[in-house]
Image (cartoon, rainbow, N blue to C red; front, top):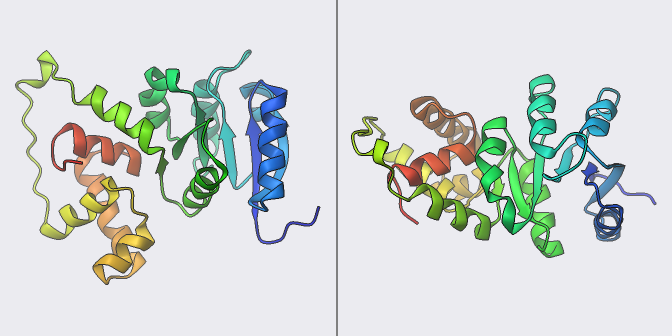
Length: 220
């Protein structure tokens, strides 16, 4: 198969039929080229020593080494890797660990080809992607009042522009889409995002979105 100008993709999942199905979908739709199908996190870490993909589709629950540990170790070694987590409904207890490890996005295994393609494209361009259904589940969880939150009052000064950018990020817009909406350059929006990350002390866009929702800086 000759696929030009597309993404090099690794699929890490312990179910062979699922890997084969995703590979067929990706290559039939010319979303990218699957350069490896690996059955656990250990095999993945061994493979990326020699060849780096544009996107990694990472399962969570696998034998030998699960997706959480594999993501943490891979991103410690190669911080620029784009890891997109393949998730089931029951995986939500692991989301915070994966977000903190640096995963760029989450997509349901039951998603259709358009959402998968959108997720791959978005993450490959440096943005974060979160299935709206999963995001709603996490918002519900982090919005539950906790005893230790009662005395924690947020004291961060955001500019009007920063809040506007933050609102769009929480709405699921990419940097380029926000730039179009605000009639600013992509570089300027990236600078606003960097400033927001610095002020909030989080390390990626997903963490920023969750921080904003948890602290009621924005509401969806």
